[in-house]
Image 1 (cartoon, rainbow, N blue to C red):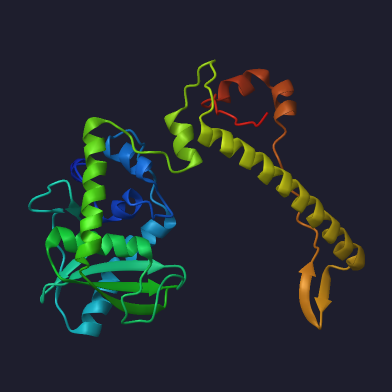
Image 2 (image 1 turned 180 degrees about the horizontal axis):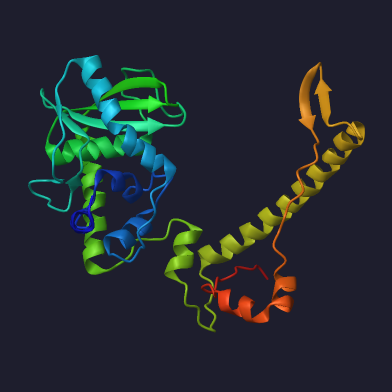
Length: 299
């Protein structure tokens, strides 16, 4: 994809909510939050480099599509454009394929079978269920087939039917989210990273705690006291086990290895202080100042 084509694709992708955004907008994604999707759609999030998982997912897509066609006897065409909902143009679909009998084809690669049910069922991970229901809503089709390659060698097929009740729920939340994007009103933060980004310019002032913050501070203090107690108990138990091991690297229970205590390889680190003393000009030339990070402390 050349730069001009990629720029046009990015503009189109940012003009609405795609299937891979749906789970984050609904708050069920392990990889992104609604706030991060909001920043992306507003063009306020730097473009992220392609991860190895993303690269291999894209590279293996044609092979998995061929396997699907061979296994089902269906002909698959790949739409050459982003599909938009006929009445809600902010709902987008970038489809891996549409079959000759009117099914959405979604292609996945997975590291493990966690979240995947029996082949042939509709039991797929929740985030992918949101994605295919989004695609069915955009296209108006009734069925989506999900072809997944697990661990590089376990090829499976799943069939998901349109769920109108879920689609109505998704449509409402996606409409509310897109309204926020258009108005420039970010959604509620769903992670500490969201909060750190949203409130990254602190001012020297205090705010009276509302009741929920008072309760949260009290809960945090109790939790930290319990964590300290558990850490002390963990150390006590480790002392017992490691004392029994002595110089030996392994401990067995009923003949089975239960614990190991091995020496790690010596770590090498760059001596910043020594380099700064020996080469102050070079050190200053390559020194980069990062953005200040806020630190949260309980008093």
